[in-house]
Image (cartoon, rainbow, N blue to C red; front, top):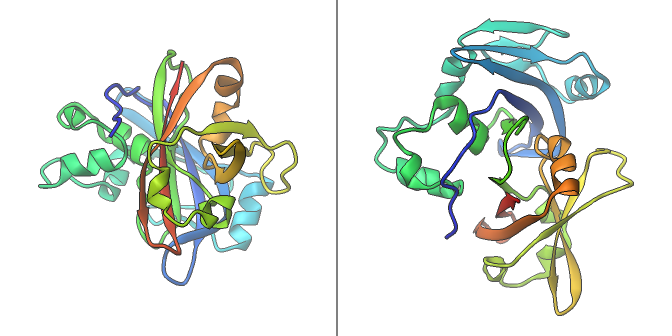
Length: 242
């Protein structure tokens, strides 16, 4: 399995929220509700006062437990340390496997910071709908990132009987010019027998910052893992921007 061996420390991490379904799994529309800024050992968390956040509150968004939502609220303090509770400790016996599950090399085990781990693994916790994405601002090319394809359950890929057969397939991206829910939407596609197959989208939180990189640079993208159930498969991609 291809693994990422070099990561960039984040200076900004986008915060995304989805309303969890009855099983505690995030589903439905994704909302960009704020971001975390990191400067050395200091970090702040800011919620936005936007139409997108307004729509999120109508669906039940109330903020993180430790940082309740207030319009344009900026939280100061050791934000990253608090959010570290969403991540496994490095002392956990399967920590190396945890890194590999997100496309990260086990060689990063000793050096990866909490902020980097949060930004590269998304810090999801069942039941609260939050995820965290590296903004990749001011990084040097080439760089790599991994992501789970959003909306795969509703894509043309679901007609493929053996979803595991997708592992190793190359994918490519196309901005979706008309999308009523996300003007920054980027489609993830593959090609089989000369036919394009729509697999889903780059998740919100990444797409809003990757447009410029993907338009101005080439990329090599490949499906590295498929897991989950038949009804709810999870398809993971590693992309290298070059």
